[in-house]
Image (tube, one colour):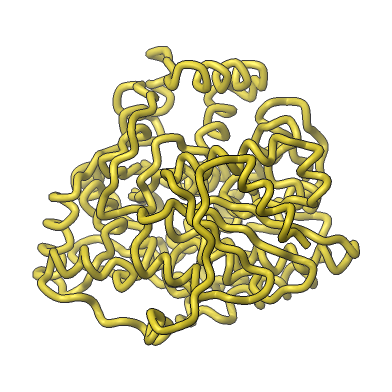
Length: 462
């Protein structure tokens, strides 16, 4: 399996090279040159597998330069610390399935990918004798999951940028109370989009990238997306075994297009997803694109689901590559137009193609709270605000004759204030969060200035 860039100037990479490169050296995003597929017989054989076993079946289709035994060991180690034996269990509530993706160390879906990515980085650095400085931007959950994936590991320093005051208090504490010597938290005076733009700009400076051996943990890293593909297969395997249904709908709360793009890849591999339901909050650039072809940036709105407070979806370029039939020149032209004008336009034929796979809905804060409250009254189950956005959108759009899976992207305790507004009390804190507000903190507040952040990295890089 070889990997190429959406912008066409990087081709023929092995998987391990793609993981270490992160953002492609031509500024594009890395993808497999071909998407492998599963036959119906191969899909059927997945139904009885544990999560790590199924993960190996999926990941090994894309990874042929790590020995099978080593890959199995990396997968097993990555999920051994999850607090549920199924890793991503399914819970049936009120006529739909909740896929709980929050059983890792930071109680968010990002752990599914970042525990694996941290182990991959350590494995590859040990094999090659290299070092790495990881840089990432977070709208909330990626930062803590990335930090927990690499804290204390040899030959790795990590720099995480989060928008100051724009993540939940628990999300901030999960990052800033990790005081390992190799962890650096930067509270950027701006939005997530500002932080993400700075990270991309830094990666675009190829001399600087080489000088500091920069690595990426954001979903610009293909391994992040690939690890998330697995749980779509796992949900389908469990539901088809239980119900006999071959197809399903999946509702995905998303702001950066990474989680739902993993579902798109799973569908391209042959997984019988009937429709992917994209759920956004008031930051609706992605739902506007799917519903009427309006991909235009706007001001970022703070919401009760802060991990989705994004107006420039970094993984969208990967989908454009397939929408443009792998025409890298067309992708380059589109991204240049978007950089200059803040918008892209699409033909009626292209939007029709999009709508064959995706449906979308925008859920505002009021409807989010109503969904949390009503779901709790009906079932006793507490949704976090992001999951509530997905449940509300899924209920609006679901097919009448298909099972509906809603991705639960975070534990509700991470967003206690929003939950309290909806149900009158905060959810119980899991053991991992007990006393977190009393732990020592380390964080640096910094302007949203690429030069200043480069200087900070210069002084602290490994």
